[in-house]
Length: 361
Image (cartoon, rainbow, N blue to C red; front, side, top):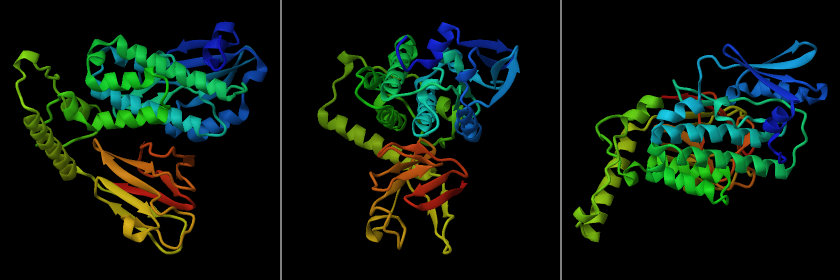
């Protein structure tokens, strides 16, 4: 087994015994030195970010990790009847959790199970929950590269083997971006976000009078069966095509503006209050007053245009703009130009200036 496939390698070699007990997935560690205590403590503190709660007990003198998955559906089961829009939503949420692990200094992606039966989804909000096993296994750059390669390969295989997905123009773009093996998962996620927002390019009909809502209901209501035109019947000039595209883009853009929600960011680590109330599709934050919407005064650590908050497909995202001192979400540094979802009570560090997501309405 190649380096980086920790879970599969240890299970295959008998060092890790996987089991199912009712609504629990269990892992028994057959070697005492496999358990990583610090990793376990970090896992407890990070659980809300997409890691299934883990409890440890002892069974026949061996350490046993227990993961309760009640109320969740496995990705493997959902894949059988998954629409392209739903897949994109779940896929982005999956990458969010993986990127969180990647940026955490005490966790390593190789300890995540890539078995689709062990990747879970809360169908109420499409949030992804992963099984992370705190193992005392040394990691290196090659380990992560192999992990990312395997993750991409499994997603590509899933798309190829699901007819409703492999025939969709958006899914083909996602599939090809991973199959080429050049782009990072952060870059792939950016493409996925673009696909979610670009519904007209895939031939979907969207009812502009119907407000966008979040979760599965939004995804299922916002699309109908793609219309594949008959090549012989297509007799439209390039000028007419451009007019149609322009009209559709304008209509969809207008829909986004009229259904935009409001998010409020409140500074927490300063004596003078600073509140950004955001009600637009794109909101720039930085220290160059004339170039941004959210001006942060008297702070040399912040870049002129440091980051931005964007509104896409019914949700808010934060994007680092290549700042010098970085943008952090819940203590994890963001990759430049990679949108990351925002939720209530999230903490954002713009260099050394901390904001909290005080409200979303």
